[in-house]
Image (cartoon, rainbow, N blue to C red; front, side, top):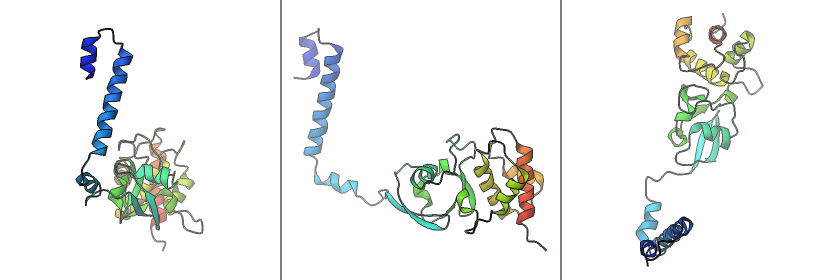
Length: 209
């Protein structure tokens, strides 16, 4: 007897009883489909083109093995799987730039890149800029010397974007640097000091005579 038959026979059936019946019917149908499914279903789950979960990522010069969900973003993987919390999650929709990292030397919003898309590519986060002996990257040193940020939540994203920008244009004007950093937002609106830091970073990055 179906649930509709029950309701027709007894108009006094409560809402709670109805919901229980729906849940029970759904569970029965699901169990039946599992028990009687054909061998083709099992083969389909492992079909070519399926997304591999265990990946090797090159992060900050090291190969890291990590279990990644099909729709997992690079920001989530870096922060919660690899412990690289310098990559900040701000808007989580490619608007603030706090999660910016370098992929093959080019700045990308990590919140809008799927981890599966960056296999076999070089990923650099804020943790990978300083040298092995602890010397700061020229951009990091410039930010330190200029006291470029207030709360500094957005600093890692700005720094990574500065690094990428200076690799393309090592001698930018202030206007060119402002354009390069336009995809990053500072909640403290400290843009003049950030630009001071960026121009100092350009100076530090140039070969010394």
